[in-house]
Image: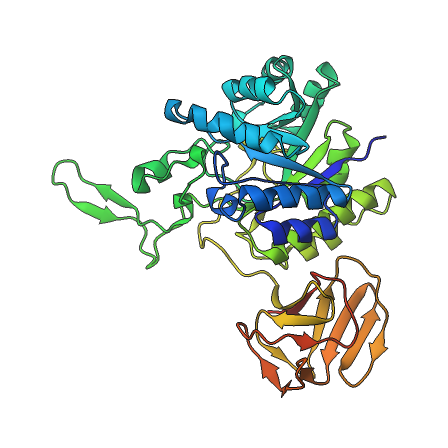
Length: 418
């Protein structure tokens, strides 16, 4: 049995490193041109993205490049130059969304595999077959498709790889086919600049057509988040998804989300996948861990249940909510010290979120690191900088690195319960 791949977002170079360190088999990202996440794409220049590709390959892992925007005629020549530039970097695949771009990539870079973006909205084996015949190696299926339908597609096209989203933001529209942002702010969703208008609060009115009188329907002061979809979370169903044998890759959304999100989602789904293959699947463990990150409430989307069977996919109260935990600090790349992300105090026990457990318990004049059950903790006896300055507490924004009781893996997080 070929093990299903875990694919994580790489919004910038640091998030890429974190996702790989926490267990992702592959990452996806891009330079801003023609990517559906222009904001995250601006984190990469051609030079730094080339460096990111080389870094990923040095770890024995894969990186897929997003060229999944929808170009206008005036941009096709620029698109050709863009494809040439990225092809020379030898990524592991291009993620594209339209037949025209597929044809272009096949001509310019026939050596680069093509993955079809979820924006193409593939729901059935007929459409899948068309794209397969165009040279697509993998289809990132529409979020609205069912697992049953994916099993049928795989049955008919056994050589075609299928990739499914299992975690992250859900779109109010049909796989991103939305014009609300274009209407309200002139920012085009399918060209990478969505303003996320569906996350805003709205006040609803009814108008009397004769008198033109407006009646406010929702009396709540903040209005209603009528279009705000809950986040997707399929961690509890990873075993069922993998048992189908139809899915080649599980994908996590979130290139613009935090470093902590990149680490926790990669680590949790890595654990779920590995546990499935060792027959130790434990869904409540994954649910609890994913609840530590910020979210809009969670839904299991449409892969397991049909859309008409669902009535809990919208969050009408708020656009985002805190998770159960707050990130307090992050260990630097040296592994010798950390930087605060929130208020950090001495004599307070913090939980460690580690990319690996290759550490030992320690108790010295700097602090105590110990393990209880499966969890590691750290308590500082003193918050001391390299220069010998000692703090009782430090706050987010303080750039003084605090010495650790022992070296910890780079990208380790300290967190506390909210």
